[in-house]
Length: 345
Image (cartoon, rainbow, N blue to C red; front, top):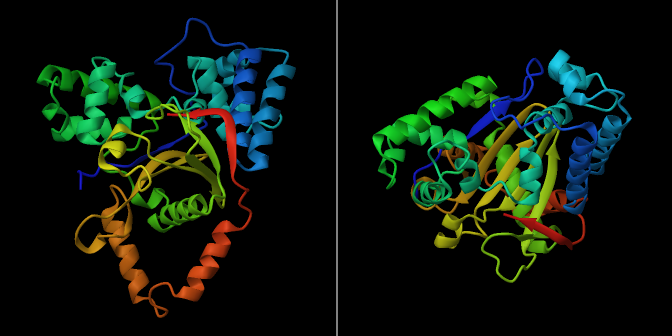
């Protein structure tokens, strides 16, 4: 099995607006930002997201249209707290608005559109072009900037053809500066496990996604990449655990296609007012975790999770409790649908 990339999460503090390191020529106006929020709401609705979340983005768009001053001016004076004081604007929505105003982009919107592929993310780093970004992803199997920073630090990046010592050093310095400016990135190799969702929760989301996908109970979208016929085959799940918001999809990367694991690897995103994060759940290939679902990069926690399951008085999940779990996971699921024209990367 390939080496495990480090998983990460980013806390979204209210005290600072999104990074200004990638400014656009001029901050976007309220109407332009509102159109992007409406598009997020429409994409979420088409993918079966919680109606409350869908309405929140449309309400936020209307709030911006009703403002008598540019949101950019509020950000300049008060940063994100100024947006949160507006009607119907919470922390997650404020962060999205701030990012769009400052940079003209939204990572959430790009993911929903299917544009936020690992290769595209890596190509935003100086000294890494599209071809080199694709090579890094294919050879190292990494998917996030935190993974890239870890690979630059531990020597793996230097083994990629085209990544000489000077280029690796430039990448490491660029990423270090980017993480410092955000003031929100966890140290890639030393993230506080107590602040991450427990692996049991991530495995539960993975189990719900795979079960509903198998039953044909999820909306399907058409991936942009590796999909010459334009078939809408990829199921997408939006789900919640308490206040935590998750999106799950099968991996559609070049590496997953090469290994034939597009129906095995599940990519889970968390995107809410408290955290942003991304994890990949796969089937273990060897050792005590062989044939078990594991969160890549958190194998030790998964092993402990399964050990506790085996040692529990009730033992491993019984057939009856398994049936109850299946019922719980399917409760409230939408009927299968194909989202017209919707593309995913």
